[in-house]
Every structure is written in structure tokens, then in C-alpha cells.
Length: 359
Ligand code: SF4
Image (tube, rainbow, N blue to C red; front, side, top):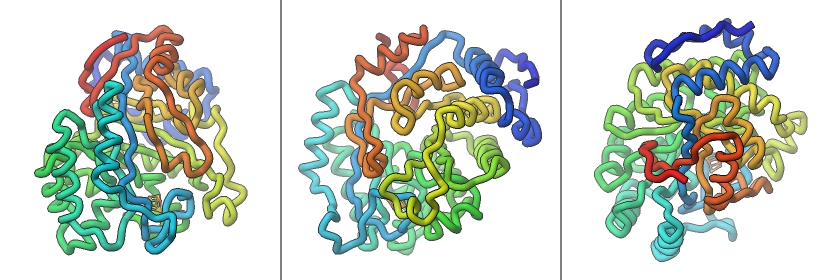
């Protein structure tokens, strides 16, 4: 049985050990879900579920990292390759503002020819043109690549982008924080130490970031718990993670599908189980986000009963997961209906999880 958690504040939440997590991961789904819901209720007693109205803008699909699970990227010279012109980016943001959006999730590939000045000018243009829009931008992978191309430190890259208007960084590129798994599925990507270091640097500069996990890449239960432990330790050190977001590997159209056909789509049971575990383990994370993008609207909704207190984004545009054929979008009224459907109060938030309006 899971230990009964008895606490009234985040700082005194029971800290689950790795051994307890290994047992919990095998628990009856109802039991782990009930414990996660209880934890969520203690942290969010007002029964509010938040969401953000945003749009993913992928400024380039040209990337020379070459992750085996990626169906989005192309190499330089490919006829499908693009770098979005400013006017296209502007039009996308104007469309977002017209529906009440506040955030762009601004990411691309690791382009071999774009150095820091390109990114400084780009962020400066967006921030100057749309000062009310939060630029939730890049990833530790892009920051590391810009650092390499520009021959400056990753912290200097972050500081220079922050100076131009970037305020937060998404947790993309974490996948599984296990160098064993990464050496096979994404050998050219940042290592575990570097992913954590770059997030820590962003936090030290006063930026917030999110933390993610993609499961289903051949990892063990122990590696999943090691991932959560790495996040928990980093959060204790620098404290800038706003939320944890769990995604499942989408195999269709990826190079990995041919190389490892045994790695198939993950079940909703596994998704809900790991989400609940994350809510229990990450005692120093205020927010757990449900990923309806990879799981579909109804599992996303159900995740609100397994520890999630945020339903993510309406995702006006999404290209990276959509490249695998797993394509979803959601209007604000659908999001509101899903949240009300489990008896919670829908509240639109911004990137910093500040509440903007309820429905
Ligand atoms: S997942 Fe990101 S870093 Fe990896 S190949 Fe795709 S675009 Fe590049």
C-alpha cells in the first residue's frame, strides 16, 4: 500500500524515496491515482485547473542533431527545409492575440549556420513588436548548439536572449535523463549533466523553465525514477521549474520505428501511472501538466484525476508531434468543457502560472 500522505503545505510534503517509487510504479492504478489526487488536492485546494492559450511556432525545421525519434527535422539543403520570415511569425502572433493568447512556444531545430546574433535580432523583433506576448523559447539543446556555433558559453547565450526579451525556456530535449538511453536514441544531444546545467543557469539568471519527460524509448523503471530524482534535486538547488510535463514517444514516421519496432505507442494506463508517480515524487514542483497532445483529449482530462492540475495549452498550432501523424488541437471552449467535466474550475493562466481569468 502507498503511505498515506499527511501534510498541509508544499514544503512539508512527504519525500518519496527511490525505493518507494519503485514499489509505487507497480501499484494498482486506482491506488496510485488516488494518492496523486490527494496530493494534488493538498497543493491546489481551490479545485482550479489552469491552461494557457498559446501557439507553437517553429522558426526552422533544419536541424543537425538527428534524434532517432524525430519526424520533424530535415537537414540543410533539403527542399522541405525552412526558416520562417519575420512577416510569417508576425502574422501567426497576430492570429494568436486575436483569440486571447498570451504565449508563444518558440522552438526550432539546431541550425548549423545560425549564431547568437540571428537569435538576438529575432527575439528583439518579437518582443518589440508584441511586448505583451510571453516568449517561452528554445530548449537546452538549442541553447547548447547556439553556444557551440557562437563560441560563447551557454549562460552567455541565455543572458543575451534574456536581455532581448526571452523570459522562460521549455523543458524540451530532456526525453529520458539517462545517458544510456540517450546514447542510442539521441547521441548528438546534450548529456544529462548539460541539460540540467543549462536549466540551472536559466534559473540563476531569473528565468523560469519547465521540465519534461518522454517515456517509451526503451528505458527501465529505475531510469524513470532517476529522471524524476534529477529534476527534484535540480529544483532544490535552483528552484526555477514551473511545472513537470509528461509525454509519450510517438513512433510513427520516425527513424526509430524501423530500428526498434518493439518500441510501440504507450498505453493510457502507463501514462496515467507515470503521471501519478510524478505528482507523488516531485514534492517540490507546484504544477503537473497533462499532455492531451500525445494522449488525446479524454486521457488528458482523466489525467486531472491522476495528479495533473494544468491541462497545458490550447495549442493553436503544433508541428513537431504532428509530424508523427499524432495531430490534435483544441478550442478554448473545448478545454473549458473538459475541465468542468471533472468538476474543476477552468482558469486561463500565463507562462508564469499567474491566473488571468476564470470560466
Ligand atoms: S528532436 Fe529536436 S534536436 Fe532532435 S532532431 Fe528533432 S528537431 Fe533536432
